[in-house]
Length: 98
Image (cartoon, rainbow, N blue to C red; front, side):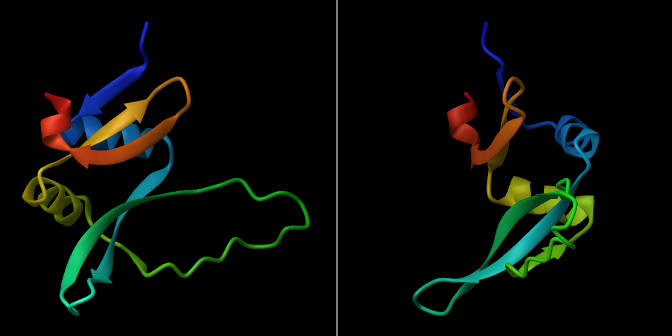
């Protein structure tokens, strides 16, 4: 039995992410012509091993509200593809969900 699901409903996406201690974020990316577009990200707290110190990563990601993140998800016509067995995800085009 497959453990892969396509989530498009806002409530389902938000519940899946928050259940895994994730937060929505948006990175501003420039293409080769200098045009800026939004790239959706999800940030999850990772466990830090003893002696490793604080996890610090500057990848241009800015935390945002669920309202802004979900509006951008709809604008880009994306869905959240989740693998429940591996606890993994990917943002994919909604037409792949059909």
